[in-house]
Length: 204
Image (cartoon, rainbow, N blue to C red; front, side, top):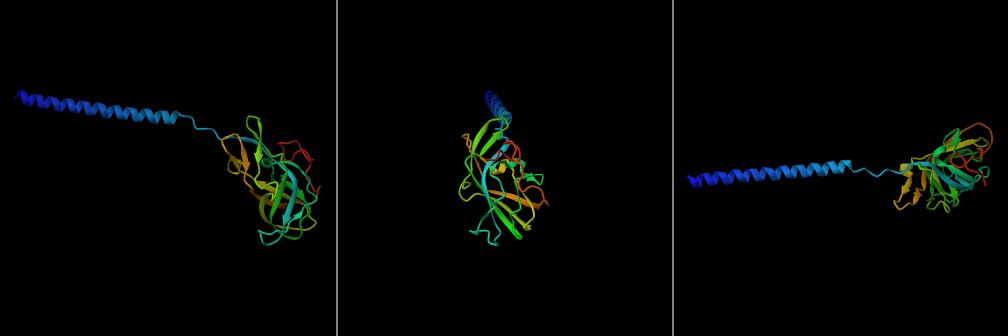
């Protein structure tokens, strides 16, 4: 009888210990989940301006997108443009009357070295533009154009996708942008320069 009672007691004690261990594991898992949920996610950098230093703009109207035939648009003024404010016909990347009748598939914007980003806290940092100073920043448009008519060339940019934040304080711009071209029907052949951070920067 004593042996039987001892055996039952051991079983009960084992059950209690097992239950305590399970409860402790559940508490530990819950604490870990709470700590993970409470840990703040790193904020993505925000941008007030993405400024490119335009030296010149060239266009190819060849059917072959890999063409080596490029013509400079002489009526596009050099200066700093804010890509974030270059996406509408009223605030384009540039205006030009230099196209010939046909189709423009791409333009390229040859850049200088004064390419910067203005972060949401107001700080200005340099921005790398791979091949921007050599083969240029590519703007893909594929639009029908007319000779002796003024056109607005606009770009669409999502800075969270186009800007590369390397985590060490440096930033880069991907070399290809999507764009669009629309006829504006007259006016000056180039948008007026404005302060950096607006559509156009100070012309050289």
